[in-house]
Amino acid sequence: MTLGLGLQIGDFSQRLAALQTSESIRDLVLETIQPLGFANFAYHIIQMPDVDNVRTKQAYGISSYPDSWTRHYISNGYVNDDPVIAKVYEESAPFIWEDSISLGDLSKKQRKLLEDAHSIGISNGLTIPLQSRAGETASLSLIPGDISTDDLRAPALINLLHLLAEFLHGRAARIVIEEALTNSSKRRRSLLSPRETEALTWVARGKSTWEISKILIISEKSVEFYLDSVKNKLQATNRTQAVVKAIVLGLISFKG
Image (cartoon, rainbow, N blue to C red; front, side):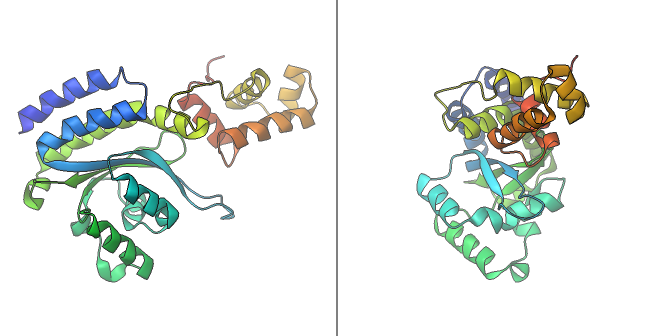
């Protein structure tokens, strides 16, 4: 299995590099994991709420879960109570749900979430926390089909799946974020105006509002206006997060 998976990952990474939509990535991931005994997967990018908790967590990503479950999950706001997501913030290494999540430590809503998931066949999984690339937390969860929990614990399998997850994250993060911000996987457009791009580029290069106003020959108030617009478009809570997201999306560069 180890050799076969190693060969699959090589093919996976090559094919992944050519994909441009979340739908095509979903199909490739399923094609890769199903022969290994996994039934479904969920790749999520989680954006934390503002410091003052004005907003709740937001989740976007790619999954093969039934649409009915996805709608149920979103309508109940489960992203804010999901014990798997909570564990992702605590762990840096892959973890198996039944080994890491204690039902006795869960809230009533968290237990209800797990009960609802169990009713559609999602009762255990392997989750791989992923390094943040845009100011958010990301993870890949793999749901067993005909693979046993003992096989799921095999270090060689976990290590290779971790590699697959990193390849996925490296390619999919930009596509997922862009689709979430444009609300369309079929239609791509420039998110930022030329002036917004200029202002944010100078922020990335360490310039203050006053310095940017002098460089662009506009008022400081105008600079603030453009940067506020950027934060709104990129769903960023501050300038730093806006810069990182814009770099991930290829909208700006650090290079001078």
